[in-house]
Image (cartoon, rainbow, N blue to C red):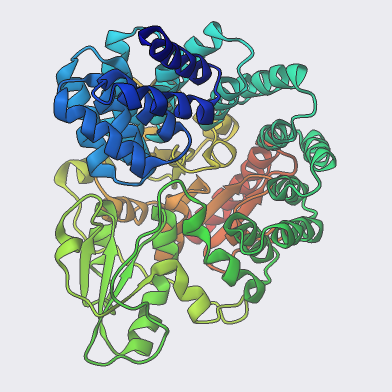
Length: 604
């Protein structure tokens, strides 16, 4: 009899190992009919039930086992898995923690707790768990992959790249590792490296539609537009219902200035996935780039949904443009510095329409310049960097960039009057002294060549100072750098010194100070960054240098700017090439210098 009962357990385990869960369950139950007190058999039965998706019963079995054996780490661990499958997050976390308490070197329990934390969006906690698991079980590929993913999702691209490269050495053919490695390389603008990774994947899997689509994205960023179009078409040939393929094809066509064809692709993506935020946003911004503002604002409203971070939400209602006298209206800057400077012109109309107390939330570096807006009752700081905004009381709200749709802004009714910004703040004495030390009798021209590197397409809109070299030798002109954020060891400092460019930008603390310095100059030459919007909003002369396919606000075929009457636009005639832009700037600068001298009566 004893041997027969043992055979039941042996058969149960054999079936379990083969994945025959129903059969294993039957043998476990028959065995437990003879030995109901067997904790091991109960644990294995609970595991089989859990693997079949019978989570409630497995939870009960595991809890019964723990009554007689409360320090069993594997039981706590599996109980945690069952709770997690039921969405009982706190019970799951407690079970994994109990498993670790019972067995401090339990790598799998740390791994499982990390996975739970990751799933709940607690990335820093998940990272700690995965690191602890790797301390115990070094170079475990599954845990290292989870750690790499968590680091990636915290946007620590360089560290994530290191982990993915380690994993690729362990398994050079892993699709998941290589795809993620390509992604983090793209995010670091290591486009040639990403191209090599994607091509390696396609050697292993030539029919991988998503990777052809990724190739299209990289080719477009590199300006290899025909290849970008071809790669996206290949992705769609492999998967005709691939909405993201339509989006990347549309993006490549837009970069070729085939705007209607691009919009057709974005609309095709929306047929495949109705309401897809990225497709609607791209359709909207492409119509805006065409100057067809009325058709573009609806898609532009999806902008926050296309970002890695979730959009902000409030309990209060969103303002619909109606009068709300006696209420407090919060308008918050929802994008970059340039956007807030450009769109702050609509705050006057928001005040008039709402008849409310108008509160404007901005980022710290812009506060002082927005403090001078006469139609804003209160300026507060973005809650991401200060606690002030979280305490403010308001009745309704709206993102700043949404005012344009609310007010039905078109090219024809665009409020282009300037200045709407003021630079009334006194400069620190040391800045005044730097200005006083500039050569007298020569026109002063400001320079900005880089934007914020965190901006998605900064690589395309920015350049290096040496690109300006042909104009820096123009006699009779004093050049002043307003470039902000230069590190002490930035090599461009040596370039500035050798080119006789006076550095004031490194010493400026905020946009109010930049505005005050810009007001002392005769002209600003800048790439597409916040400095262009600052000068334009102040009504100062500014020449803005644009990439071949610029942001929507600059349109495609104008040398003037409907947003800023004092601005001239200089556009690349081919992708990524600044030489022709600088040549035109050099020619125009010579003409401008002569006119400036004549207007000044030969003196300064």
